[in-house]
Length: 217
Image 1: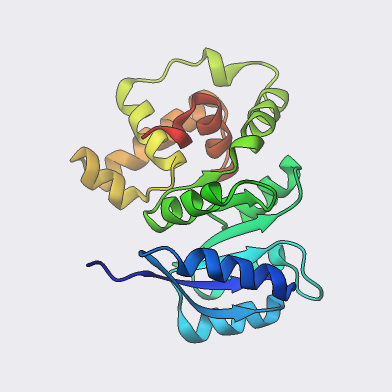
Image 2 (image 1 turned 45 degrees about the vertical axis):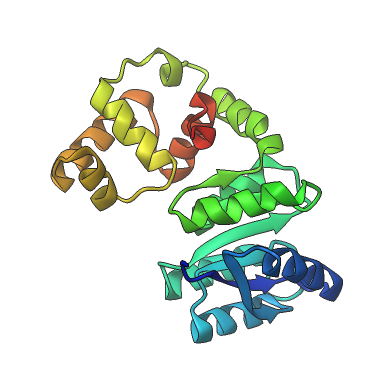
C-alpha cells in the first residue's frame, strides 16, 4: 500500500483545523502530521517536518497565508501548497498562484472538492475551485481585449506543451512525457506564450482554465 500523503494544516481557527483533520485522516491515502495556527508557525513547522502538502488558510493574523506561501516557497521550492479561503475574488487566485500555491479552494465548497485538490496537487497538477473558473477565464478575456489568446494558431506540439505547463508539469516532466528534449520543450513553450501574448505562470493557468485543461482527466 502506498505511503499516505503527509499533510500540514495551517488555520487560525481550531475548529476548522479539527474538521479538516477529521476529513483528511478519514482518507486512506492521507494523514495530518502537523498543525499551525499562524503563518509564522506554518513556515517553521513545514521547514521542520517537510510535509508533502500544506493546507494554507489565506486569512491569518500576523503573517497571512499569502506571505507565508511566498516565504515557504522561497525556503522550500518543492513544497506543495493548497490555499484555502472564503474569498471569491480572482485577484486572490492570481496572487496565490504568483506566490507559488498549486491549488485554490473555497471553504464553502463541498469536502469532495477539497480532497480532489489535495490529490491533484500531490500528483503534480494545479487545481482551481470550479466555482472560480469563470472568473479566472473572464479575467483572461478582459486582460486580452485584442483576442490574441483565442485567435493565435498554435501547432499541435505547442498546444501539448502549454497544456502540460498549465496543469503544473515541469519542463523535465514534459520532456519525458512527450519524449523530446528539455530544450525543445522550452522552445515550444516560448513560442506558444509569444503567440498568445502570455507573460507568466498566471497567464498560462488562465489560458488553461479557458481551454478547460485543468479539469481534463
